[in-house]
Length: 280
Image 1 (tube, one colour):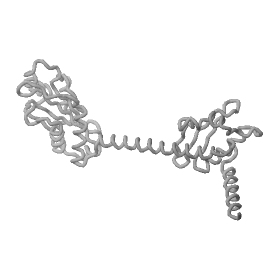
Image 2 (cartoon, rainbow, N blue to C red; image 1 turned 120 degrees about the vertical axis):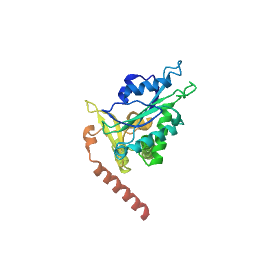
Image 3 (cartoon, helix red, strand yellow; image 1 turned 45 degrees about the vertical axis):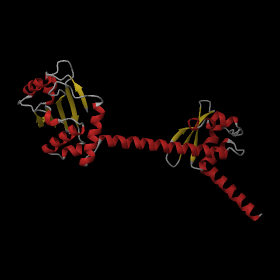
């Protein structure tokens, strides 16, 4: 994290608090406590009287496992690497770096003067984003866990999952078209979808009337609302196409008929048909 702030005694009291941890690095600053450190900072930042936000407040937070394995010098050089990656001339600018260890997740607070010797300011454009990428590059160089990489991997995983769902949806639509290219009733439609690895799950209203259905990919367990795959798969549209429940049976009993038995009958009839064609 990095941002430009007004700063002040309260911020320095929080960062440079010995009850929270200890100092790991400083430059061009003297002082034994937060007040003295802040007074030294004011000498530098008051060279610019126009700006209000004259201090960078930064937080560098290694992964818990990495942080627990680091020594004081590791945190010092990590701080300097971070400032270098931000293209900040840390050798000629006042700053203090304080490691907070009161929580399991150790993290470095850096207070850095934006005011240069000539009174001009170090730019703060997009400094937050730059800090994230700087931390990522340091983690890669030092073999540390990168929060940015974790985020990137998560996004990739989401994209892969999305692509997988899209492929499954296309497959469901293709199978649906194949099944409905011949005359079938709703029960046969469900059984044939099941044969291809997709379970059609109808649901009834209080009057035990068919209200809609969902489709589950049996391989992944992903559950789809039929109309979200394609409007042609919605219950109303497939019924318009002539795929209707058997009116001779009560609907709820029809829906409770075991898939496996119906599937066995379909497979048996198809095997018999193939055998008949071979004999001919």
